[in-house]
Length: 189
Image (cartoon, rainbow, N blue to C red; front, side, top):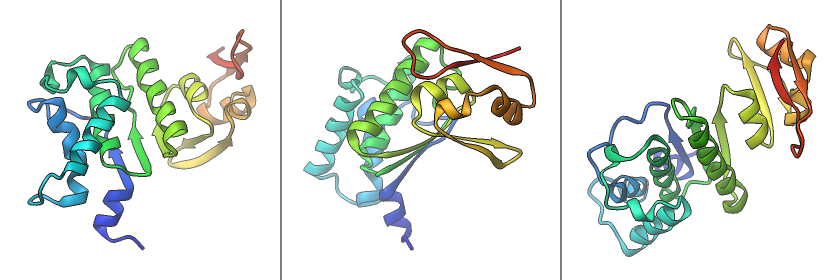
């Protein structure tokens, strides 16, 4: 059983709607990730500063550190929020549709970053995505839900099968092999 503070130190959450913090600098926003370690009235230590700088570097946004969050592009803003989660130093990241409202280039950028952080940083990442092809490209395992229940779990290749996709989405779908990809691509028939 975790205490509230221990849980906050272990699990970081990025909600779908991240409209708050738009008047802060990127460095201030990322610094908010240190809150579970010292509380509202605690002092910001040298260790906190190092965690913030490490997070800025890990997400490649150190050049934006003094910019106002509200002036960033969608992909840059998502990287800033992910940097805040990294500064939190949590071992588990929960991300709710971090690519919603982003163009394809920014979706690839954000999901590539999240995958790299998971693989290189030894973090567990649970991510909600609605695009099955993006999930197949960036996730090691997929758990598909329908009406709040898990209806399929497995590797991307196991999930991207016509009968499985029909079960998940309730529509006819097929898959094709794509050159240089280790998984098929799904499409609606």
